[in-house]
Figure 1 (spheres, rainbow, N blue to C red):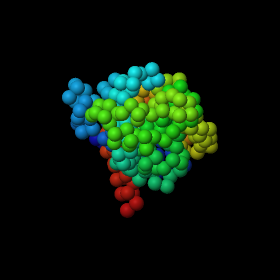
Figure 2 (figure 1 turned 135 degrees about the horizontal axis):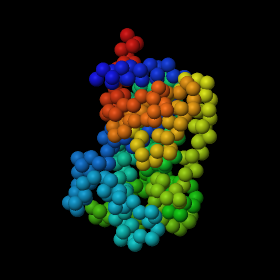
Figure 3 (figure 1 turned 45 degrees about the vertical axis):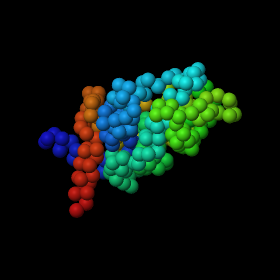
Length: 294
């Protein structure tokens, strides 16, 4: 406990003294707020009909319906595919408000100069922070794209609600509600990075802005605050944060991960690792921040 208290105080000082903060968010951040794909109780709440079929977690259903493309699915299978995905997108993207960890992170950062990179497509970051100073290269549940990757992306809220409101069974949507691109005459799918056809341009267009933000911090105190980032896509946040912490003289890394908060020994004097509950970590920092104001 003593080490944790010492480290959390040091983390508070680093954040408080930082000129800029680069925040990296992974799936663990959303999971800490209740959007946990391995949570069996959440699964029972959202998908009781699938429990009857022997499924017990959201990951199991995503694995079943995570096809490379839906263009070749028979109509019957496409109806079942959207019977799940329409409701999943509704729950994750539209029904759920900003969860506590995101709101606590917003409270912690306050008026500090920050930039966020997130691999989460659930729109939680935007719900708490807005869309400025944000890079989300993995897509967004709120959009469709063509299965071939042609064209741009399409807002899907109206279509999602239509699918759900008119389901022909508890597992399938109507054939007429299978989303199509009238311009390209082909099926649509969620705009999430899964293969080479992912439409990424709208999401990576501000990579230069993100890189410029970091480049402008070379001679400043910069904190890389990484939360809930594992090893699904470590090349996007985890590894770059380690490399940048090593290269930038005034950089520090704060890594929070319930499974693996380790970091390379080469940056051990510039890094802190917290293998702990994310929301509790944020609340502890907020408590220190507020007590220091008194």
